[in-house]
Image 1 (cartoon, rainbow, N blue to C red):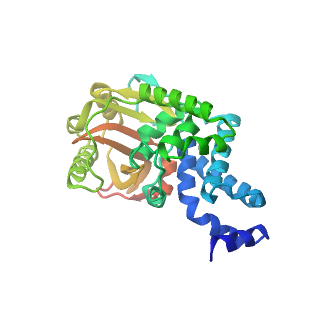
Image 2: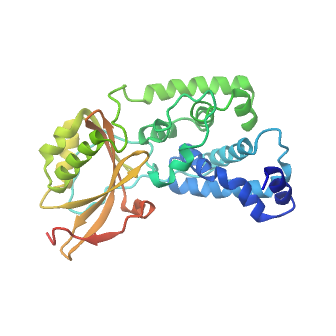
Image 3: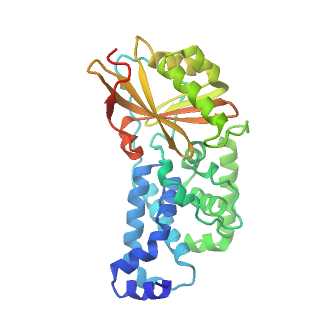
Length: 338
């Protein structure tokens, strides 16, 4: 049915017509909310708030801009309100039994960060980008990029995502934020400078997803982790490798500290099984610790950031994220009890 007919019916209170109108944009709007909030759960909530606000305000849609732009305006402002009004999730203490981690390099700021399942990304990444977009699609959802975004002031974050990630024109962004073009331009300049300061130095590009080169690195990582071979793990890491574990704020930088962290986790006969998945366009694994009951119990999710043929970052998330990736809480141990 034509968009005009659906809009007329939606304004008359037809919920099915409204759902048909907004359904093509839901995946990309949720990823937009994720970039703004850094949290998969918060992005889901923000999307629902956006759709409710759009349904309640459909009579006010004057068609001066496209329906997509109007929805982005609502979503952006809902996310800004969430960032300003809600207290961010607090950091958690290290609570892994019988594992004493080394002293961290520093304590991270973006402790509420969560991974985003690749299974939900494709439809969003197929959405059209404006002519002024500066980031490649894969980079714009990577963990490093989303983390850097969270450290920007809310208005600068919104402007940078709308302008440089999605490619909206300055005038469109000004209208979305009830701002002037000059203020948008100024905010974008400050955001770009702040992001540049926080971005890691340019290194080797990661291998293409699903390529033989990526599969080779992944296979070596799995063998090393499942066999608790710390030396083999260290051989895979770049000199400046970065290890983090939100919502625990500990962050480790460099091969020596990363090796000490891995050794602490793999000590005393602890053996893991890794189940592959993907998050944020990157290789990821559900991590399962073998138990004496013949089961391997989910302990978290690892996401790898690759640079050339090495691992430049390892991010560990808590086990509560496993269901988002279709992974079970436990599974039969391949190697039996240990």
